[in-house]
Length: 442
Image (cartoon, rainbow, N blue to C red; front, side, top):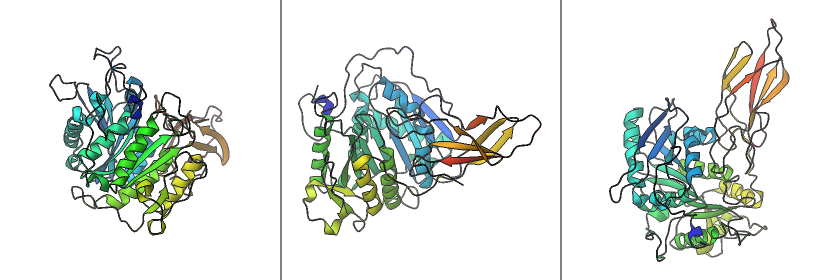
């Protein structure tokens, strides 16, 4: 079992009818679009049904890229993907870079073989690319079929994200592998290892995991994750790959606070790599802004990164970081996961009052997301919405977060009923957004 856990936990069984079947409970009306395919019985094709939900920022006329949020193995993780495209924080990152946000849902029964989808060579690569063609036509965004991808994956999704990077290095702008990596060494009875090509080494990759996954705790269910992740990192870095390691000092196989480092990391990589025009080749990462740190996973005394030109350690065992600001965020994340932020969230818009019901719209802060909203009536504090955001694994957040870094269902709505409003009296209301470091909007 320990060898299997190097990448993710695999549960093997037969593919049977599911009771109850997977259901996408959230409607996919524009700016959301969805396609779904049944599983195939043809050799080499995806055996599980799968749906793909994409969000496209309504104000963007031409997309420059696609952010992929890929769930992990097991029925619970797969179902968590149903809300991935509805995440306001990931939408903020996508909007900033003229990207769409897509969340696949592989309908894997609980005791079926995860390898049949998380290894993209088993048909999920082809199904993913087919979905982009079909969603391009459905959304009237033909460029969706050809734009580059920024891929985030958890557990088996990390295996998938890394595999897609090796298969399509010309299409992947950056890849974040949370608690899962693809095979790069031959092991009997395990998937065929990938070749680490020179092209793949030019794709920024972040290997990310929790300290309880074998870094500082070495005897639990997920203790094999770090040895596998470390071997993957060292193999790619030895070939000059642009790869880093980040360890959440608080978490296990859940996603913890990783998004607060993932956001600035993706932001830096997308800023550097996305072409101005959709369909043009990805730009290479600049070597001038790079910062380097020694690999010191699990060490409470984090050695701060330095500009690449000043690093005098062993490069093959060093952490690659795209720029100084990400290096600062990485240093804080490695210490306590509490990445700081000095930018307030955007102010809410479209506040409407009908009777005593308030509704509004809001975009998340790219760096720190949304924690809650403050409702003021006649200049005085009235309520927080929600009263307390929920996240058992990290910072409380407006949409509430699941184990798999996706909003929980039902989605929290931007609405509030003022049950204490005085009948016949005209009130003045204001709504203020608060991000997860406590900064308030206008």
